[in-house]
Length: 351
Image (cartoon, rainbow, N blue to C red; front, side, top):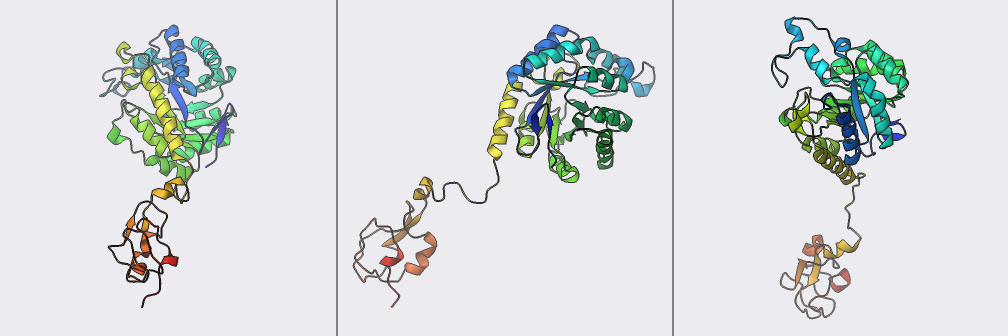
């Protein structure tokens, strides 16, 4: 895996998961709410907040054709232009949001959706860029993002392996300072049974880059499981309160839930540790409590050892239990007292 850094923070295998709070449209059109979301992300322990930089007119057009209207799901019946007009983050807010994030010790970056957004984000010195799942096929856009010379994180929710390869190539050809992929199921919300987290390992093996999860499923369980499966990045939507509504509220976490996600993901990472093939406790204090062979009844010198006077019990200072068949039927070399750990000096040869 080829690691990289975002503003000095190492991203890759062995590093704590890099946790991104996605603000998306959960500001509900109010700058003060957007700033409060940045604060909530910082209070929850996130590493970064992410915006989406577009206008309704840069991401789509306002036209009455059926393919421009959503059918089914959370946004059923809404036109693309209407939805994006509601969910967009005004560009004039971006500087204030970037500044608040820096004040709170967070990275702030965004998903640009056209070249004008890329150029605008460059003026804010964004430390990284995100390519949304539906933009992975826009290789000219990805190449332009890569040309900013910053790390690029690419979501893969609606892409084949071939399209993912093309997206990675475009970012690298552009000059990206590192690339990561996010496994994603582009459903809003995504059902837990559809998450296919085993894809994380598949993507890591296929492309040799850090892989994470962009998670639209309910709760934090899927994100924690992803970390246990090797996810280096977790992206999750954050809202102040789902009851306040908004285009993404239904699949977003509230601040206390997001804080629990951060803690649980980092705990899962700590629990992974480094691989080792010995067992903790062997040779240490806990070894005392393993089973071993003990004298459990007094034995006269020369008397035969049998199942009545030698048994496998705790503690573990005697011979290993695997030696029991070897010692049974053999004579004691001296008087053995109940409670003595058995060793081979106490056992004579078979007659």
